[in-house]
Amino acid sequence: MKSAHDHPHPQRERLVQYGALTVTGLMLLAIVLQLVLALLGAPGGLFVITALLTLLLALFILRLTVATPAVTVSEDGLEIRPLIWRSHFVAWEAVRAIKDYTLLPDEGAETGRRAIVGRRKYRPAEGKMLVIPALPRHYCITGVLAGEGFVPVIAVTNRTHTEYDKLVKKMLIYYEDAAQPEKTD
Image 1 (cartoon, one colour):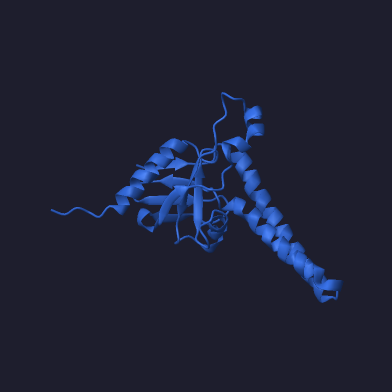
Image 2 (tube, rainbow, N blue to C red):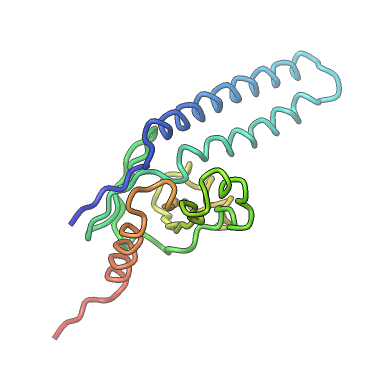
């Protein structure tokens, strides 16, 4: 049975996604202009260095568009439905691993959030990351930052996906079922 798990605040997520894409575009334009200035003879090669730093920063911004896409889970696999990029269906056999998501803040680091939300409503950040080598290369940004190297990774968290507990339970069951060899009599 399929279940869709979108962002709990779709308008805010749409604003973040398109904002990240716009900022990334502006940063790429800045890189081109910095390289043009360097080619025109700007002193010290400083513009080449700043262009490289801007490119590195642009990757961090672009990560916002690929890190935690909406997903639909079924027995056959996972449909990854990012807002900006093309959707992908991934069979459970293509998922290399499901691990704890390492890019979430620790509970102790969220005193400000706890104060704003309130002690009773506060829930620590929880998440799982799925290591999926078959995904396109732009998903490697999250993989690198999460410590998986240049391997594509997506994540699901209790702050970016509706019915998070149900989602994780289904993912783990389907993933384990796919990992088990078929029994024959």
